[in-house]
Image (cartoon, rainbow, N blue to C red; front, top):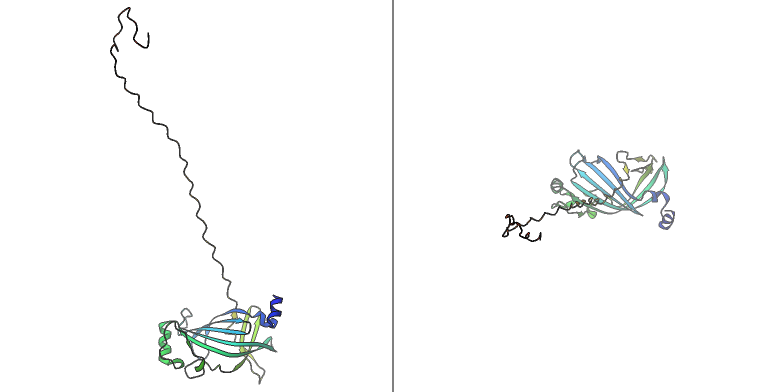
Length: 228
């Protein structure tokens, strides 16, 4: 790990926040919808995926938005927070449900009126317009704090130095994926032991009577074969 850190050129803090982070369902500010977000950080690239629901049940998701940034973690700004500098790169959106597509089409969201379920559209050039994603066409300075296993983002106020964290949306590591073991081989069915059958006795052939059978010999006559 130390060799990778030295080779990457990242600070120890930036190295600690690499990988995947997930946040539970919360209320999206300014839009009145439920949201669930995920962050993926790889070296100096941050990908943020947010799914929105037009209900507050947090069990179905209607629209997905994806933003990518270059990011740098700078110095401490107090209370364990560090400055997070984001450079906006791309933005896209995709309806997940029929309701999501209908809502985006009714708004003409990002200037598009033919949103289709499951089809992502690049909206990088139209961010900041009315009924579109916020304007990201600039460098954004924010704050970031890692507190135990909780990662929080917030707003950097360079004027008052009263930076605030968004504690309504706390990112944590996703649970590890447990590999499903392969199905066990079925136990072999024992081969039944064949018990040898008793041989069927051969029927005794019926003896054909011969001449003289049952007739006692006359006195003095020799006994018939096989007695003589």
